[in-house]
Image 1 (cartoon, rainbow, N blue to C red):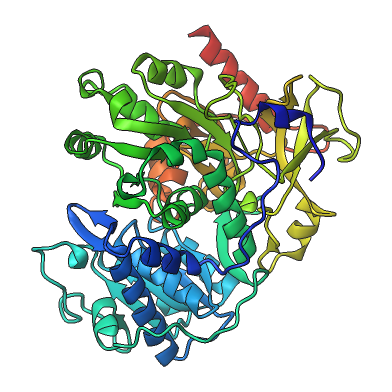
Image 2: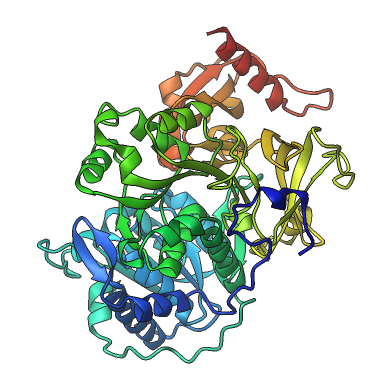
Length: 555
């Protein structure tokens, strides 16, 4: 790659270009198992599995899936929290050349139905706590193979569940029984090329239907290696035997998938699994751990930990090798608080469409609070006039951020129109408006799209609007993100009612409960006589956002 002016800001040991291994994603499991077979790969509440044990279970599960008839290119949905079962299912499916479809366990039945219909899922890994939604899904969508587990099946002392205890429907499979029924640990002989699709990662949709970014094996390997090279100084300072990562980011989210799961396999780091974020549980867990080399998180998590009453007394600066913020802009206050506690913290930016990685602040070099940093190796960016999408703006001027690199997705699944809209000549149009300074550092200042980022999740307001429009009393509904100290943004909806109708805030919120995942539900409702619109009747979300920002500034 040609020399870019921001390369001079790179840490001394980070290359401008990388030769990427031409291997499929699941080979990362073999690399770790061959390098450190007896080192713990996974730690779930003190119950551990070594890298060798993970490899053996991945191989057995892949052969079991092959026995069920799964072919290369089929879509295998993984609908699990962070757990050994997620790791085994993810890599086993990829070993057969199947395409993993990441599903958030918080999705409602309606959301699951839409995604499974869109992708043509033929196999679903899920767990006992969400079976009501799965039964509703399977009543509407035919899924030939459903494989169910109980997360505690991998915790010593809890015992392993039975199909009868989980009340499995006829024809459904029990995860542990399926594994126990296959002794073969031979690697499947399925030819897989770097350009083969490996993962469908859903992001928000502008029409109420999420978009599935198709990520190839090459995309995932490139992103994993880029992230590893970026943080290589800390890795070099940490003996492989002591490398670990706090796996609190969900693996079904692209950030957790790359920067925790695949990063850990590539670097032979033990994953300390946290299936859910509960601040008191997390503080209790941190108290028991002497050292965490790498802790990737979203600002919501970071703020909750840094502002916890126990934070001062826990010597977090000694405990964390590097705290990394991503998923949403990190408040400068969080960064300053981390520094006050002696914590090494850095911030980056990425999207599902860029396999999680795009830009970051150097770990040893110049960091700029509020900046998302500079582009990763082999990554090029431009800021272009949002009106024409072509003309590059001058330094210091606002422009839409477009990005090109080996981590940029192939296309959107089953959505050629959106693919053509956002991918042009290899450049991904991100919808983020940024400024680049004289050192190459980027600052996100606005969004061309209306996306809300709450707690690290990307939420598209149109999806919320469409649900609320279905309320029989509602005439119009417009959702926006409003500033929230804890979640970054929270969701507020403006509603006009049909003539003669009355409704309460709680009534609108309750209406969304079985139709939207918890993080997508509005937290505030304001009733209005009319919604601001343009001359052609287009809803002016920006006006509503400006009004809310003005209220915040007055406080």
